[in-house]
Length: 279
Ligand code: FAD
Image 1 (cartoon, rainbow, N blue to C red):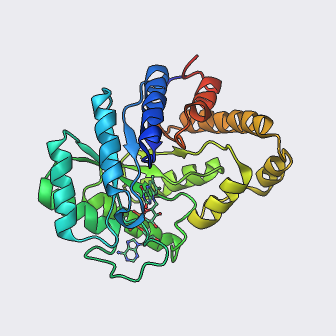
Image 2: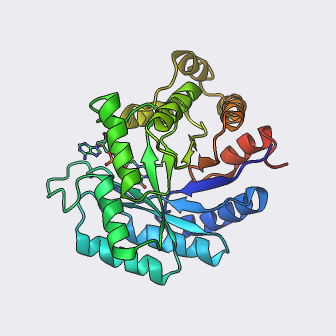
């Protein structure tokens, strides 16, 4: 099987972590030749400098890098400056997000309320310089009010100038196909790339999924829980299950796959091997 892929990192906190990430990047690049590597942005811009540093390392290592940029609790001046810095560093791709307020945040929400306003601002400031990805939620965002408004707001991001979308991770493949059907009905025709989350630790996955609104099907929860302390068997089972999910997505027309790597090469490579994307 063949399909383009992209990979996501979070910015390491230490120099040692950055050195390790460079090796992970090299391993993934060699095995999968991803279209680009994206780098997350901490809530409220808390990793702004580390995100910048990480994308620069990725560019220097010969890959295209796409910083995530969230706008909540930020100002137009701050975003303008970041966009200029990215342009000066040769970056031409951004994952544009609203983001979430950092926990305990008491300050103002800033000059942007939603991601569509950020997309509009980036287009106003930089024209077509950046290829813009936005977030999509096949299982709905935790703050969604209704299915209809969710699509209305998604459409606003597309009309503001998004080129493509990456989904929140999901383990119900039908939610992706349902999302794509709704897009088609509304004439939304940008590529919507499934976000693929490997599973390495059951408790972590449950905690994170509860926060971001991703559903872990009941059968899968029981199955994963059953591995108890046997992490190797859990990872082996999960890589196999997620590979089958990817195969269905590819057969169903997914334009590419975006791997949430968790800054570990093997979690992604084990899935990729099972689909025949690498040896
Ligand atoms: P929006 O598209 O603005 O939507 C947020 C909520 O507001 C939704 O419920 C939507 O229905 C609603 N809404 C949108 N527009 C309006 C409107 N005009 N009026 C009323 N309601 C509206 N977070 C980070 O902090 N850093 C990251 O690097 C990061 N990377 C991510 C990458 C991907 C691929 C995904 C899927 C998520 C990522 N997130 C990241 C999480 C994301 O920031 C959160 O899910 C956040 O709560 C929403 O961001 P958004 O861009 O989807 O917001």
